[in-house]
Length: 258
Image 1 (cartoon, rainbow, N blue to C red):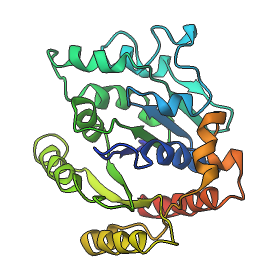
Image 2 (image 1 turned 135 degrees about the horizontal axis):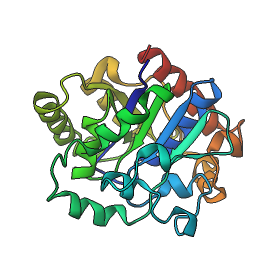
Image 3 (image 1 turned 90 degrees about the vertical axis):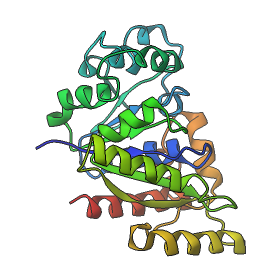
Image 4 (image 1 turned 45 degrees about the vertical axis):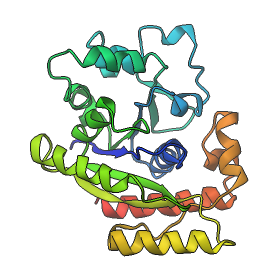
């Protein structure tokens, strides 16, 4: 059985993309699914958010940069995390340079897909945290995946750019990955005290209908603090509102990917 591959993307930064990737992977692993998180964002926040130093000498020659440039196989860079069933393929800011190099390479759009196929049988879920832009890396992420998951911040201009992202998804489906599906849209940084959050969530539901996840991720201090301690929010404070929301959301993802 091949892994279910989910690409988490939004070309807008600061929408909770990496936080969602880390916590979804954490709760899938807690539910006994063998899970691999691929940090495919040159900022490397998923890597540092799990307590791995991006400038650690041990990572030299063993990151997603090296995999994507064909120097090493994906399985050779995978690291276990402190949590059972949860592994990560780390990244450093070098990945931004690799993207420039990739532009002139053969098979530049399918390099991640080919790498993922090598390890797919070993996992139940593979989560790809892609960069906040419609770049060559993001397109690689879409082509490598079965599902696309879009976190959207419940603030003004939230849906700006999402239409463009969906256009890119259609192009990818037409030309490279016809089986790609939109898994859903997740409302993040939801503040129930403001009418704006409620209005934006209503807009999202109007636009995406049943593809909108029922769970919303609240604005929560614990969620914001956890990465600086190098842990998912569920490990940092499992009773916090943010942890409970990500746990609920993970159950929805499991149901939708059955």
